[in-house]
Length: 155
Image (cartoon, rainbow, N blue to C red; front, side, top):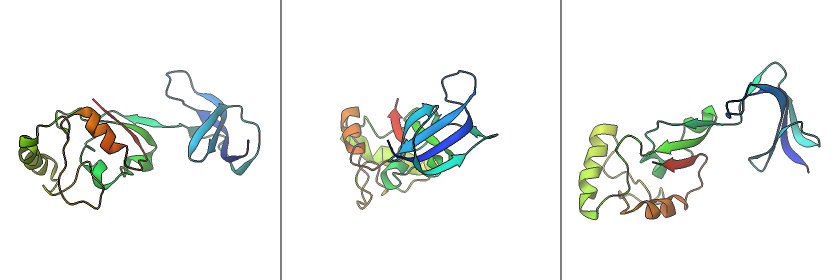
C-alpha cells in the first residue's frame, strides 16, 4: 500500500493506557491505517525520532453543541489533535428538545454561551434559523449531513 504519510521512529502514546513505545504511524486519505512498524512507501515521510506522537485525543468536556452547526471543523480543537469530542455533557444540548421549547433553549444558549438566537445548531451552515431536534436519532441524522473533522459523541 502506498501511504500518504508515514511518521517514523516516534515515541508513540496511543491513548490505551499502555506505556509509550517507539514506532511508526501510517496515514492514507486522512485516516490512520497502521501503527507499529510500518513498511512501505509514502508520499511524505517524517522522522519523529526524539519526539512524542499521539494519534488523537478525546476531548471530554466541550461546548460545541451549537458550534458544530456553523463550524463542522470544530476549530480550534481539531488543530490541537482532538479526534473525538463529547458534546451535550453540560446539561445543555440541542436534543432532545420539545418543539415548543425551542425559543427557550435558543435564549438560554444566547445567555449562557453568547451564541446568537439565530445561530443554527443542526442544519446546513447556510441556514439562518435555530434548529433543534426532538430526539437523539434526529440529531445524529442531522449531524451525518456535515463533513466533520472531529467525531462527536453526545451523552
